[in-house]
Image (cartoon, rainbow, N blue to C red; front, side, top):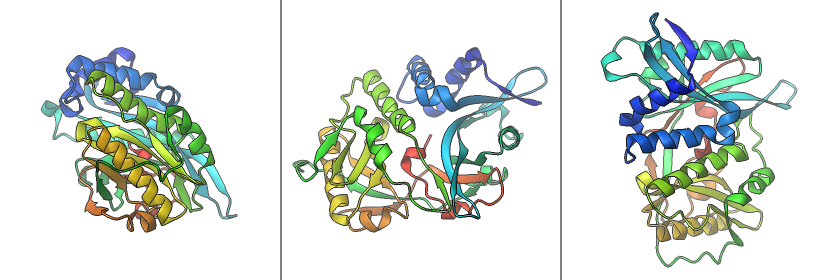
Length: 318
């Protein structure tokens, strides 16, 4: 058995195989077109790879994808050095091949390959929808996962914010957002933010559903970015950078109004230490244990803090 990178033909075949797991409500062909568009996105072109675990005859036993994610690790001198972390997604074994440890071997081999590729690799991360046990076997450790939910409400005004944002505003918002001063930071790029909006654009086109009127808002020096998850009827907040509870309320009230006008049921904010003081004080915010997307991390070098001390923003999800 051995690890290999997928060819374009093998990627197309995996699209059709994995449709049953992740394709609904798209048809098989629509799902394949979705994957082609996502792989063509600049963020994916620069740092996405599809890995295959093959038997000696070349049969695919399991597969996954990795995505380049920027990260910063504070050294003994107190200076944060930029490196690379790898987000792992779409771990899949066909039902007839399960129960033989193929996914575990795949995860082990991918991590070993990443460890030897570059001294600048910090960690591998993933968001598990099957609980922690499978990935613990490969050295991953989970972090607590909580959501804050706000119902979408009609009649809410967006006048409390200075501006609603469009896709072209995203790079400027990311550039002026101050990175938190923490020992280890996973930090999404503007291209990674736009990848979420590309997913929104794809589903809007394929499902003939209008996009929300805005992808974020600003008030003073505070800002928020969000994206529609049409499949779940949610507007998910990718980035919340608020200087006060008043700013956080204004931004999230705008998100609730935008969500309602887009026909979505709720606004969802992933809990993070930096945003918890603001979100917890927003009227009507409900804290719930997250169902799926459990953050997990496997260090690829020494000196990293444990997963429970790392912030995982929604923008990091793949």
